[in-house]
Structures are given as structure tokens and as C-alpha cells.
Amino acid sequence: MLPMSYVELNQSRREDVWFLDSGWNNHMCANKEWFSDLDEEFQQSVKLENNSNMAVLGKVNIRLQIAGVTLVITDVFYIPKLKNNLLSVGQLQERGVAILIQHGVCKVYHPKNDLIVKTAMLQIGCSYCLQKFCRKLPLASKQFLKKTLTLGTADMGI
Image (cartoon, rainbow, N blue to C red; front, side, top):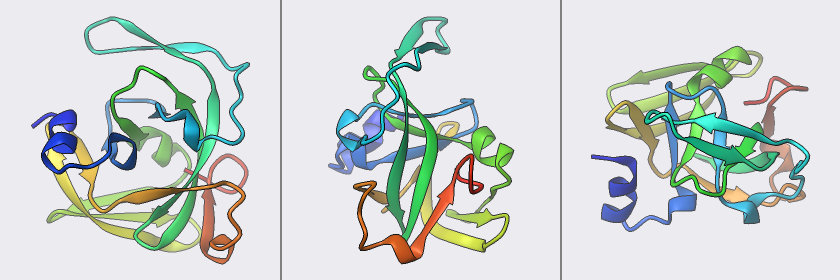
């Protein structure tokens, strides 16, 4: 099943579903409405498996709530033509985040805070869909600040 098929079959909104993927070097998202600090000076392109390119029109930090924990995902590429949101396993590991996928469950470990997320997963080809994964939160949201972990450049964010 392709990632888009999962979204259609489960009547999920594409922007609410994230895929954990080891084939990409960067986190990527197409929903500009999520961004409050988009750096549009950042321009690049991403090469796809079929050797075509997609334009990266900026870089941003996104705040997500995952299984009751609020995380700030840093250095996310804004790619308007992207069909699915992607979290890069490589980018997570570069920041010291450990990921254990076993028996349909994904556990994410922060280098300083141990286990931070435990959620069900569904394997789709070479990607994993994080089920019941997240909802977007405004970056300025104060209601979740006590539980927020930044997983990025400054604070070991993802």
C-alpha cells in the first residue's frame, strides 16, 4: 500500500498523517498553514527516486502533539508539491534521537529525556505511518509548553 492509499483508505487528512522514512535526508511538509516562522530565503531542490526534482521553498520549525507529548520538529523543508509529510530517520538519528520499531509499535527516545513517544505504526512499503500520530499546534501555543520537548538544533530537537 502506498502512503497516499493509506490516507485515502483511512479517510485521514493528508496533512495530519506523517510517515517515518529512512530514504530521505530531511523532514518535509507541504502544508504552509502550519508554519509561523517560515524562512523563505532558504531555497533548494530535492531529488526524487525517479530522478526528478521538487523545489524546496523554505525551511521551518513545526510544533506537533504526538501521543500526548508536544514536540518541536526543526529544520523541516517546505515543499508545496509534496503529497505526504515525512520525518527523516537519518535527521532524527543525527540529533541523537533513537527509534525502536518493534511489533507494530514505534518508540522514540530523546538523548536526555529517555522515552518520549510510544505510538502504533503501520508499515507501508519502506515507510512507516505513525498512526494516531499528531495534530498540528501553533508554535505560540502556551497550553502545551510544560510538556514540550524541542528536538532540534539548539536543544537536541528532531
